[in-house]
Image 1 (cartoon, rainbow, N blue to C red):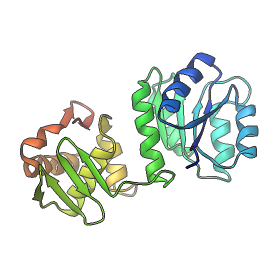
Image 2: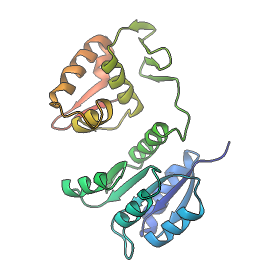
Image 3: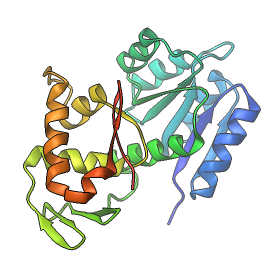
Length: 224
């Protein structure tokens, strides 16, 4: 099976090596670019690149320019890295077509988890028909959930919410992100909708409901 190619763009060699080491251990082929100009050259010459991780602040052609140029012709998943943490920078990233936005410093393990979640969503890696974490098993094909072997009845949204949690296990998810991904971007409901569904989901999962951790002031995290 061919390795999945990931392009890592950052003017800091240390940062490129850190990201490359973690992705290589997971079996990905990592191609490096030290600036935006080289990144675009590589991308145009290697159209089979499955995902791009791109720093924002770079000399010459910066990350926003790389993102905007690639978005004019491709929907390849792009994760933006930046040292800035202001909301307007994150909004600029999403408005320009970024799929994820990660602020430095970050956990390499979290970055890898987001890479794999993105690749699953875009079909670059096969999406497992069954997901399992902490004794909770989701059978996507049959639309069934079992907890320690016992069937659990969930509503459609509860099923989608639990699936999203387990696919992103270990990652803190904001209420806004959950609304966007589970209820879609055109949903403008109150974020308390999430809390109501999580409460019901925890109840139906019994003791396993404790695997859904509350991140106070932010959202939730599934931690097996």
